[in-house]
Amino acid sequence: GVYALNADYFNKVYSIKDRQKKVSVSIALPSVEKIQSVACVEKFGMELAKKLLPGPVTIIFPSTVHFFGSTIGVRVPNNRIALKILRRIHPLTCTSANLHGLPPPSSVREAMEQLGDKIDIYVDGGKCVHCGPSTVIRVEGKKIKLIRRGVIPFERVLECAREIKNS
Image (cartoon, rainbow, N blue to C red; front, side):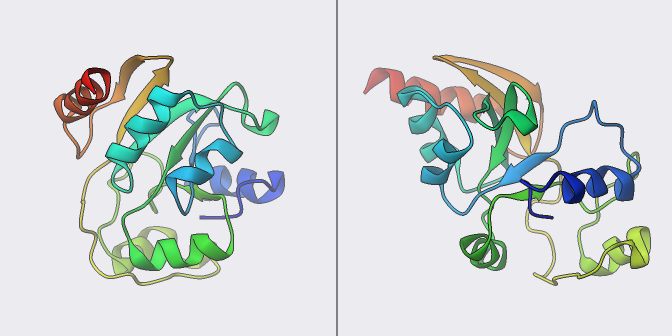
């Protein structure tokens, strides 16, 4: 990832991945509490984020950073190395290390095979635990919309939402 609040770095991600700008890139944060620094999050959305994160879920909220547009996808990774980096500098872009249209790599070696010297630094955090895409949801008020199926079943998201509404 790159520092997400720098437009040049942010645009470089699209260039490296050969990805169109209409396909959003989410950002990673070191904690659920930091989400409010980039997004407008109501109580229900924050409670849901606390139940689902850290982990392989991207939650789309209304953005407070105009650079990103009207919405922003946020994640808190469940990886100690990523979290250590994010505690020092955040937000970082959060996207799979693959070229657009190719399968996401599950190791640094696979990422290097796809991206080569287009990347300045590779960090080897070991084999990917959740080898698959993050589940992407949009939260508006108390409504949840599935945007992309992923590692965490949408049924689990709905279960967490019911727990919040019933508490």
